[in-house]
Length: 264
Image (cartoon, rainbow, N blue to C red; front, side, top):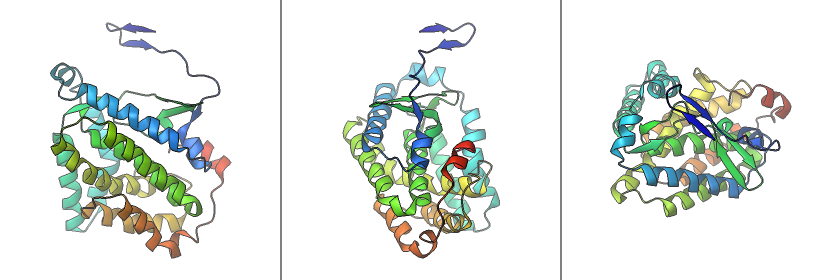
């Protein structure tokens, strides 16, 4: 509605009162495939329309907040805490590639708590980390939360896994990024799941309502994911299936309490 560049003031039209935070829906076991598809279209559109834009690259060249807080709370923290040199090398390699791959405008914090859902529409808010960077990070940040939600609601995991598959199907179809970039993108997206899951269980952005069984799985899976070169989300789903003895015995979360604690 209004943009005052001199005073850094942006005014948006308010979302409808019935709009819900996507985190609340995912924690409540509400998984709408059409929401995932809408988000895929939206992110693909932003990445497509800003790819290689030199003006935007200059205007959104402040990567420090994103590197310090987003990569810092997840990737860098896991790297600092990890003793296994193979895991540390894999995390460092992923961070280096992510920081170097400045190809399009990214939101850089596509956490479901920054996404409002109403009727058949989605709205991404909180753009303070936006910068010219790696589109794989946007996709990974969102889908890692779908995956974590599927782990939390283990008996309903297939709903979350299907949403991940449908998101990627639409994103890949709509994306006009060069083939060379897209070939590497999916593998990097999957590798990001490792530090992002670890950060929610053990890092500076911990989810307070995770059960010990869930954390046990994340401790094992995060290292496996970041050091592997998985090319399909199916490998992540299979990883969850192989640990059914751990995840299947986790008690259900208190959804009302989780909503109150939602630093998710």
